[in-house]
Length: 309
Picture 1 (cartoon, rainbow, N blue to C red):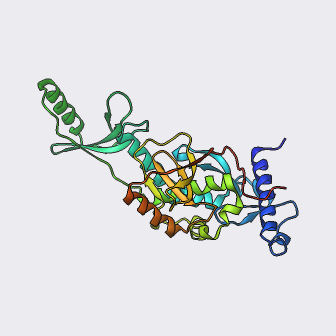
Picture 2: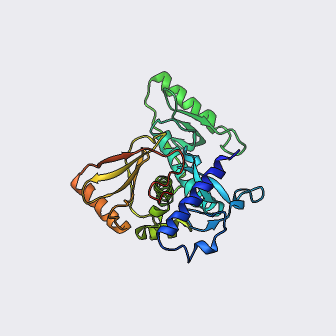
Picture 3: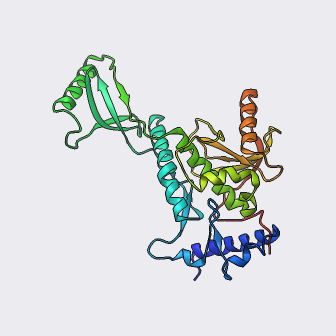
């Protein structure tokens, strides 16, 4: 019985083969690939043999969640384990923590987050939970988390305030570890991979995507291109994709994750990354709205732009 991973490999290998032939690269590249096909990681474009699916306890080709699993994504395609692991460490962890904290503070479903509660001169470490009818704070019980007596002092202060119906002046702080650039890169990468799943190798081989591919192949904590616009809305369980038609100066592909929009080059008259950044700023300055044709979110790789057999 063919597994899902084997199905994804075969579909990708066939799409890659047909795309290389259509680009006139059969003699240059195909002769170097194994006869039973090869699958190229969409980030680094390194080609892998079929044995990469089951190469030891950790296959070289791994299931890629889009968006990342830590932010609620589901497996969608194959990437190589080096690309998957590096992105997870350098970018995806920041995106997950940023979403967790934002969700908690805006009363959206989330896990509790570690915070410091300060009342007067007393500071108590604990967990803030924004779920339920009212937010709650639970003091940390691990050893040396709080000074002896501080938790009781805060509890007594709150009890007196409630009894006397006095307002409570307090401050909640969080050690902000994620960086906006790393989180942005994570969502840009997720949008790129979703676009690959729908459109295929012909899309990711576009020359205008070369600068993006270079960075995706080597995740680093560097400034992200201004391709992401926060929306202030909750994250969607199932993202949306749109071929943007308006504004006319922005003929691109948009991926709507709910809390953020990511814009990538379209496949018809594709703009450069710099061109999209400039068009986005113009759209924001003019107060224009995005309109276009919706593209269903993929459940598996489709390779719609790649040549058919």
